[in-house]
Length: 313
Image (cartoon, rainbow, N blue to C red; front, side, top):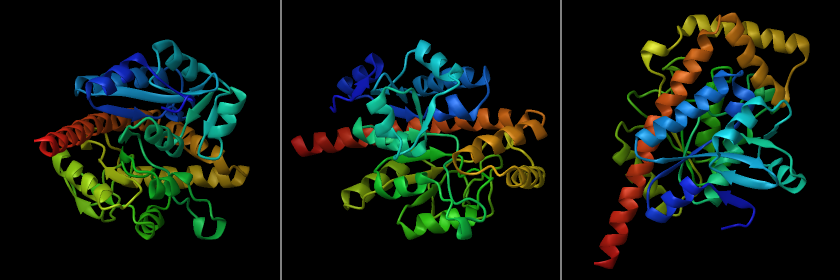
């Protein structure tokens, strides 16, 4: 284990006992949700993972080390920190070297999960190609990380503030498979259905795990996107969220907001314009993803154990 990585006692015990572990990001705590819902959601998501028989490993950079699994005090520190860095691949070594407090994005969490030997990561939605990305080249580092880092990412699709068609094109070009749970189409974060086809539909965790094991056994590096749509009861009407998203995007453009700042701005504006209903949807979909992610982690662990037993017999 790299000496810059510190496992929590819970995660270390799970690894030693051969139990499943699920990585969780921390940007959703520090930048994705307001206080106090961010802390409550972090606790609830960890509880969901435990209830499904896996160990949660929320990841952040604290005191110059990558922390894989956080205490409740550390979760609260992130939830209330006004200056936590938002860390992607580029920023991760800076936070470690300088001792800055840092919350990991999808990309950085994937890197840290791989370093810690964790195969499954649960998030809300992945980043993607921003609208107008064909001209601006504003493409989330999450997509490049999915092309290079062998971690399965369970999400409610990509955030609907993005260009979802171009996001799927980018993933296809880089050989990143997109698996869909419960439907044929790719999910769209606040709404279950983007109207765009995923690559393969695989409803059961065991089938997803066999696919992932086959991909990696064939030497095909990189990650896998597991698209898990938000439950219909907690989803937002597609027409409403599309109209509100267009308004928020126009406001961002008028104010010159871009880069790392645009996603937090858009999510905050969508929350305000929906009277908080989008935040409730966001919380529901993350918890729903935690169930699917824990089941996938357990299936991967079970298949790995069975393979080891077969080789030894």
